[in-house]
Image 1 (spheres, rainbow, N blue to C red):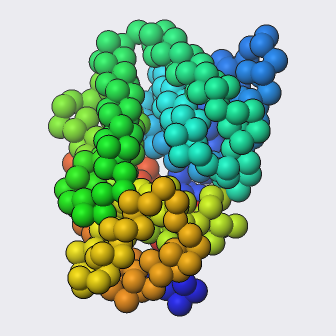
Image 2 (image 1 turned 45 degrees about the vertical axis):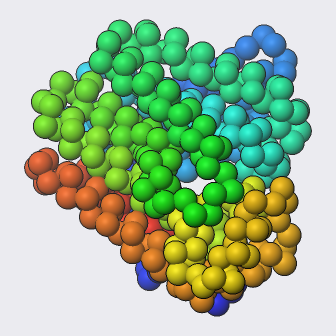
Length: 337
């Protein structure tokens, strides 16, 4: 697998630039989340603190803060409150996902369910969502409430659709895109559209930011699925081959199946229908991915969404914020974490 080379050529600093651009507000988001998750129940206190300390890229709240700044938002703290809501939705889905997937590692450390069990993790995930909805109601905007509540519903539907197609190696690329649009891109789209909503921008600008976020999310997830086959667990922050061992069919596998010969297709159909897959089978899968250059094909497909995301911001005038957000689109492909 070491011979599979990612397409990254040079460091893209846009992620760091975005963090620096909204650093003070991101710190306030983190403090707000900690405050709103406070509970007298000891297990909730321990689990939420553990989960929050595990870090993460915070890309979704960064997008809310960045899009708000792009739109010139300066009144009050709605950007901070709603960025916190977006992050709470994301973290709730992570807690639930780890239970569904039986994951032991997240962000380089043990998952909450690996320590406290599945029941506690599901309930604490529900607790995060309940706190999020309290904050959404307090914001007072029906538009924002509808946007984020519908997004939560679509994420759940995407996760269920993925379960429905588990092990289906002959899945259409169209179905795969439908899954990742729901489970990943919807929250990216909501995170960026929120910035325009609270800034009272017109529909064209709201739609532009939604398109930016959605296509960035699609590119981000495709890259994430590709990283699962060639990255390092120390860099990636989760078990490599996780999707394969769980029987999840992602774009690298879809591209392999499309090009595979008859014998290889029989092998792929067999291993993805098994309850468990072995390390040896993973090595064989990696060999097929290398043979058919599936990783390069994934990044080429992701580049299509990167271009749409980048161009979506053309409706906004030139600014530091616009430049950083546009550069962030290519970061989604160049990252190794």
